Length: 536
Ligand SMILES: [Zn+2]
Image (tube, rainbow, N blue to C red; front, side, top):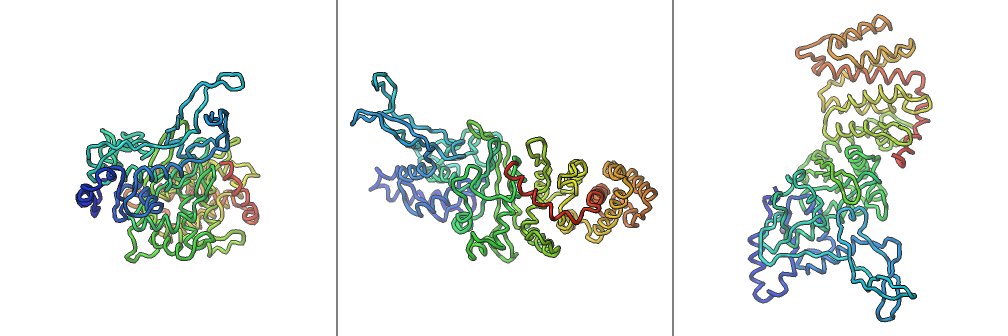
């Protein structure tokens, strides 16, 4: 999949190089050509190329100079001091200890080992460094030319290691991302350097026991503009928990991806961080207008556990960011229409998707949020997880817990257009369900009949579902709308599988049950939602 059509590397590059090489044979092996018009089709190496172009510009460069410059950018002082023996003064001298920046240090393990000798210091024999450790990497290009697995060029190649490509770790799992998975990956100098530069272009968020990283991909011109005109403004520096902002985050990849995207989407509308032109560009990249804009942008998200090295667990590709962005715009509009006094629409939307967590002892469990985020990112059905959250978390929450009052105002409103478009659930029918669910929940609450709602939730087939409705009709003195009673072929109601109708009804009913008489206090008590992120 690497050699993308339209890539003009290989033969033409080679002829160019060899025509020059007659006079420059000695230097040519140490130089490489960086071209702006080459794309490899691989998100990691293309990101690295963007970084190389930004730092060094297109043209011919010295391999070792570029390599050392990249190393210097990926190494930082740790704040600690070390000592080495200085031969000229015959004494110990201090130096600033360094290390690969976190989390690159999970992938690059090359630590310097300067010469050591035993010396007599203050009457004691000690093994000491004779110079401060210098961080460096070596490319080890082979003399013989071979085909680069990434760009297809015939050039001196080197065997890929993890410092050039984080996915080298497990070819069996991630083999589909490069050819030659079985024999290992061969890289030309340019791709190897781009691979290292990739660590300068990723976005990441991490804690002690999880690390997620994110790489956007598109055609080269768009990718360059994305990095230079947008991400450059948004990247955070010097933080232990990440180099980008997220509306919310946690140990799971989908919740964090949605958190990242919501933050990014927000900048299209308003931002004190992005200049006007950058916001315009971002909206084009996200396909805000369906005109003949640039090809859609994709996002790769990788998750794993940090430790001595990085243990990669999953790689996800999201290719419908533009579709999600259009939902985002619709949701903002809907929330605007609710005229909430406390939150701006974007803030409320962040809280809506952020709310699906529960405190468990000293920790916060965010599994529901991750499942709902997964459904939204994959354009699947989030309602079973919302139902689960309402019945298993909200309905059992302590009185003092905000969750005990049901879902945040606005949650069900944003669900409606999503279910209509993605799950083909007729909007009018959804409103019938909302109305009936509301009276069912309210009456059940007045008569303390929570058991009825659990019976509804647990209905396993249409017969059970109708039995519960019948029961409710009798015990709560309510009328079931006719639309609900018409079961169609293949156990469908109003064109959708009966279970989806049951789930949505259970959500509306339980939410109304929990909300009963508590609406007024709801907005005043939202603030406890924002504090959990630091601990999650
Ligand atoms: Zn290459």
